[in-house]
Image 1: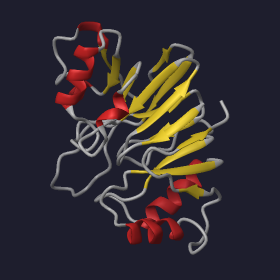
Image 2: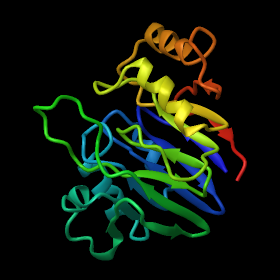
Image 3: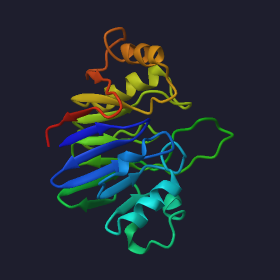
Length: 214
């Protein structure tokens, strides 16, 4: 299983002939979708979902399919069965890759702001992308994609989250609003300068890939 980091919350997972792209939003490079066989969108916010770009990709490749929340699916009308709305507890297959959906709601930013639906995706029982929530899956996770910075979290939340999930390793997502200094400081608090999470966090540059155990 090959994992490639793209801008902000987006990653590509390549496995068993499938190229699955998660959360290609407004801060994601257009090439992230090149050659994709499936797209997973955790929720409707613009930094995770670029409707115009995704619709263009779907029109360019008639075989491309999307799994997402009902609110995102409602914005991709006219595409028939190529867009599937999913929610917590659902399971489906993309080729030989099993996908599980965990979680239902976006993390709270402020009580006065309405919550939106958020689906975290576990791919192949190995890689978990929580979207904008600190959802703890109901099964072991080998590789956690950790939202490094967001209006709805602080470092203490992230430390406790990694401790709760207990992954073997973590890689960062959701980091575009951090400067290089901020990224280094935040990651150090989740590593050698912090109280400990039980899992190493590795920062990936945009376009950098790692090989993961399937």
